[in-house]
Image 1 (cartoon, rainbow, N blue to C red):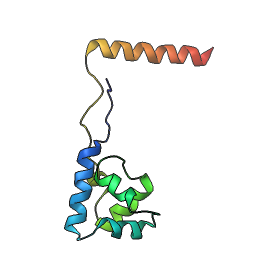
Image 2 (image 1 turned 45 degrees about the vertical axis):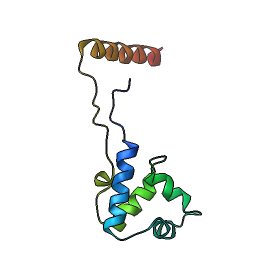
Image 3 (image 1 turned 90 degrees about the horizontal axis):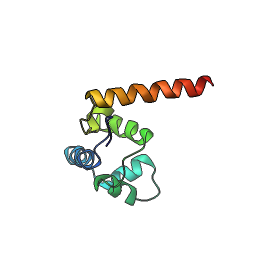
Image 4 (image 1 turned 180 degrees about the vertical axis):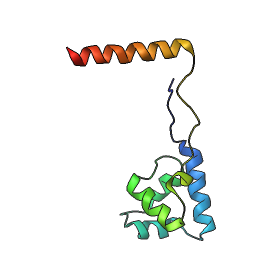
Length: 102
């Protein structure tokens, strides 16, 4: 089980598709704008298979005139607040500090 925020690929893909629709852009348009070798890369983004790199997210945010955060959809997970997980986390951090000091 993961206890940190992560990008939700499927929902981010839908948001990218929506931004493209609002701006009347096709996958081929993004391929040309970003200088990608093939349009399949963009299709993988809109299918939720892959997520654009940070550089591509930045370029797309400029193209769509939105913040990068507005393009991404997180899963909403935060660090677990249960006592058991807090204790395990503190123990792991303590162990790491001891190991690094040795």
